[in-house]
Amino acid sequence: MSPMRPFGPFLLSAACSAASTLLRPLVEKPHSGHPRRILLIELLRIGDILVKFPTIAALRQRFPEAHITLLTTRLVQDFVEPNPNLSARIYVDDFPGWRAVVARVRTLNADTALILDQKPASAALALLSGAPTRVGYDYRGLGGFMTHAVPCPGYINRPSWDYPPGERVLSTIEYWLRLLEPLGVHAPPTRPRLFLSKRDRESARQLLGQGQRPVCLHPGASSSSYEWHPDRFAEVAARLSDGMDVRIAITGSQADVQKAAHIAALARRDVLNLAGKTTLGQLAAVFERAALLISVDTSAAHIGAALGVNTVVLFGAGDPRIWGTYGELDSSRGRYVAIQGKSECLICKSPTCRRPQHHCMDAITVEMVLDAARKLLGD
Image (cartoon, rainbow, N blue to C red; front, side, top):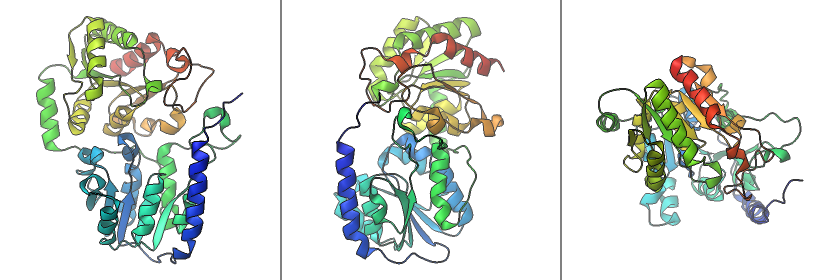
């Protein structure tokens, strides 16, 4: 039996539905013709912006003369600043409050706004921007803020046991590309492409020094239900070091420093610990120089795939059909292997495991990871 869903989302949905009903009289007629000034709104996390890069690239290809502005957060600055498909970037962190953000986006005189997340705040900003054409997913009552509300697939943000029977599960890349269809853009799914600065590449070169390209282990995640045992990461590091003569580097954010140190100590090998020592751009540049990345299902996996690095991803609570990548479309840019063990609780979507044992991640064995890693390193 599937667990009951939390009551909170229903309250949010009801509130959004009521608000959008009240706002319907403000909805203007859709803009006709090619968009000239496009506002993109994306206020989520690192991995979330990366999977929208194919959408942004398709938009630029279809409307090469359009001025495309991205409204986002400073968290992803290192990735969006070098992206040549964007004309301008606005960071909500730079403003004292939402009123100031609204005032700034209204100066853009955007004729088209695309909502690249499913946040009520983003939908409201699109409406308040004054753009006559507003496109987004009709998620939990947000469609009333839009002139073109695209229906959400029935499985979005549900556990796998609650997916509608027979409905095809789209990768997140396909999902966001579909949002362009009301603008007449029909683009095939492609792997995201990540652009890095020369400064970050030079920093990575200095951090790694001379010698072998490293095998990077990235154990940290924002949700504990996505994490793998430190002792298993340590065993992978030790056995790869002994069996394949590779250099191991452990990466992570400032929050992963203790975890990375613990793994390095357990491995009892010469491990380069870079956790907490890189910016986001430098971390990506380190991955770019790697022979292989082994990561849990987090933003690091999206970074590796976008850079064309051989990547092994450990999936627990996440669905690899949705959050995997399109590595098979272009094997010359590196290969991508998703590993998921057999478990009765897949795929739960819970940020923290509610069971005494972490069944989904426990089902991923060291041998499964080593087998995938050796194949990618040996071929």
